[in-house]
Amino acid sequence: MAIFSRTVKMILVMGFLLATAVTCQQLSPSFYRNSCPQALAVIRNVVSKAVAEEPRMGASLLRLHFHDCFVN
Image 1 (cartoon, rainbow, N blue to C red):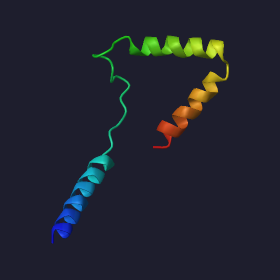
Image 2: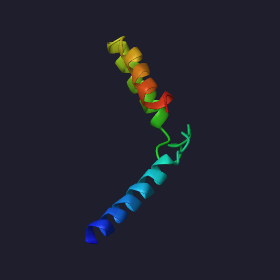
Image 3: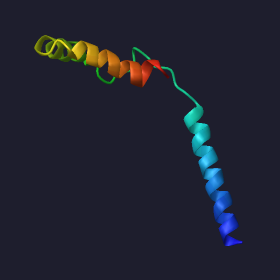
Image 4: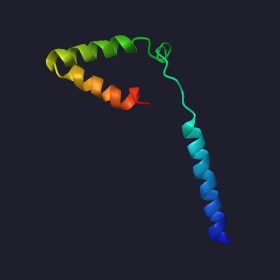
């Protein structure tokens, strides 16, 4: 009986976790507007320097974003 109860609890917890994971949030271009207003400028500068030092970095970043963001 204890094993059954533990199994039911585990199934309920897993169901809850899956249900909360399924709800998706949209990306917001203004996410850092209040907490870090300079975020976009800093990112732009760092990426520009990285691409200037290693020209393949632009393609690598595009590939990274495609696999991590665009597919979702």
